[in-house]
Amino acid sequence: MLPEDPGSPICSAKGCREAAVWVLAWNNPKLHTPERRKTWLACEEHREHLSAFLGARGFLKDVVPFAEWSAADR
Image 1 (cartoon, rainbow, N blue to C red):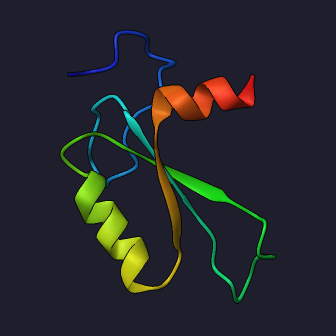
Image 2 (tube, rainbow, N blue to C red):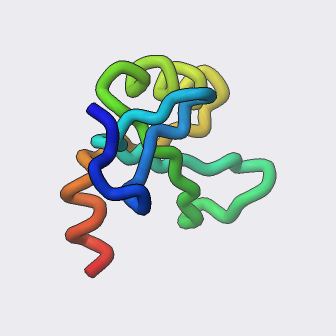
């Protein structure tokens, strides 16, 4: 499913143009303070791959549906 709005968030996987439905919150403990959260966005297809990439490095902190993450920011 491609995003309907050109300004809509898209998946962070290389070359993917699908709508983001997940937020992967992470940090690199060698660079960031423990409370700092960086984010990658993921479509359904790439959620596991991106989570595994971050998890293997010990960076992944949380995976949250995009709708919930957006609502928390308001």
